[in-house]
Image (tube, rainbow over all chains, first blue to last red; front, side, top):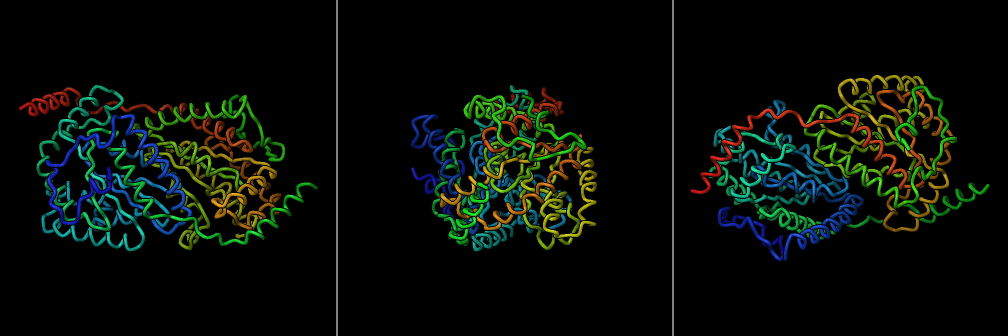
Length: 279
Length: 279
């Protein structure tokens, strides 16, 4: 199964989240089968991330958006966080601070985009400004409506500068979400995650879903595609995302740069040091 | 073996790096034995880091300093980088930029210190300003000499605000360093790391060693101790550092905060949602 092709939203494609599956096993026999595939993908990602870091020409931006409990933290801990932290950073975008609100909505985002050779992972992102901001009427429509184009322009600029962009939506069913809420209630170590607001969000779900669908339809571009990943099975979610990241890095094909030091000179210095040590 | 006690520099202790061992097996039979201990320590670190993140009261700052090829990158990749990236960031401090140089030497450092609940790992640090800066006469002695006290004051401020500070020096022998340089020469994937300057640094080693010793004697405090870790065996280095980090986190004893939501209310909301789903 070509996960990249299967779950990518084509530019201007009409999107109905209700019609897209949340629970699939894909090509996998069972969980163990998917976990093995994920491990293999992670090894590929680690190798290619190292090359990208040394090459220092291209960068990778991974955006994660999802309803509560859909598994953003899990994907970071179990898949994306396996990258070498020297070349990879995670940025959570929470409620904006007063300083952030005093600027345009992309200001805090732009300061976190990855430098050449680096990976950035956004846990939530600038898309909140056309999602929660829209649904909760935090700004008037005349403000949020133009943001789809502003986002496309922004992402085009990043892409033109050598940044590959992957945007993942973790798609879980309301039933699976409720089941995860139940597990949180039963596990005291997860009680800090409990929030009455989670249930309020469920009652707004129709509006949120429409906002997501609009974002996917308007902002899934050739240079910054959206992927809607079935996420009811955590192991399928991890396998699909790791596969798409590994495939993308393979396409980017980072290479060790030509060595710009004189190897003979280094060998001479080494021999001198070796001789000096013997004395 | 209590690594924490064994390798800590006591305040005002006189330090001779030549007299401190670089190659020890400590309590370990062999490499496999040490690797098993490291794995156990990492599991402890992961559990306690999660608690610290949720608690959001204390923070941890880990400083790494070492000669070239001593293994800073390896420690980050194999030990410290196993922490959850959502609560842990690595900061490399390279040659300062022109903007950084236009400020005091702690300006760029302070902007990277860990927030409550977080861990920061410094790959090199403010200590470069009393090491390379001193040895290469980048500023006059009247500028670098007062920095030991300035650093102590700075670190005391961080500690007073709930930041635990661990400073590790990876101590390798010149022979082991040269051996690692040889391995780099033989491995094309490592050629990007080759630098004639590495050999120049070896010729300055007596000066650099004295600068390190001064930093350890003056800046190993109760609230921000230096540890000199024997690093000729990578597996010993990893076991010792992971042990000290695990012990420190245990002492910090982070706790899940009391749940400030009304559990009965959450249960009621859950039941309502469950009922609604059945309809």
